[in-house]
Image (cartoon, rainbow, N blue to C red; front, side, top):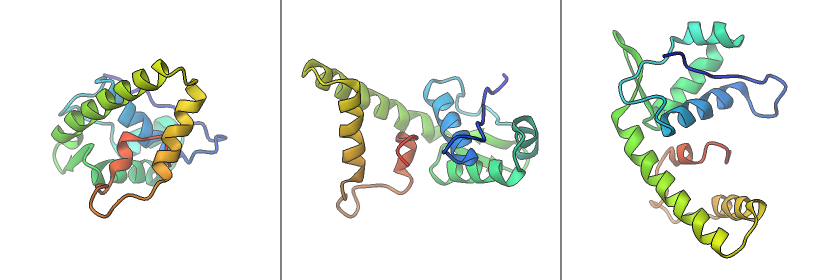
Length: 139
């Protein structure tokens, strides 16, 4: 499988974040499944025209939140726990969108609600380390 990732060096979003969020999107859409191997850091960096450190940072962040795991012999692969949590998050998001659309809110108003919720402080212990994976564009 060829992993389709694009990086816009003129965008306001750092290249490592573009890579990270696109990999999360591929996992979410099940274009990448548990055990699928990601390209090596050097290969992906060369394909995208970015520094190897940029790809390494994206992979490191993905590993910290459990989306991928890196093993010496098998390289970087999609982790088993990544899919289940993402499916639950997608289901919750779909339910939320259905509810607020039924209330006749515009898409812009819906996005504003989500952004506002992301800015709210959370009680200690409620937010798990790395929960931003469910919100790739929220940083």
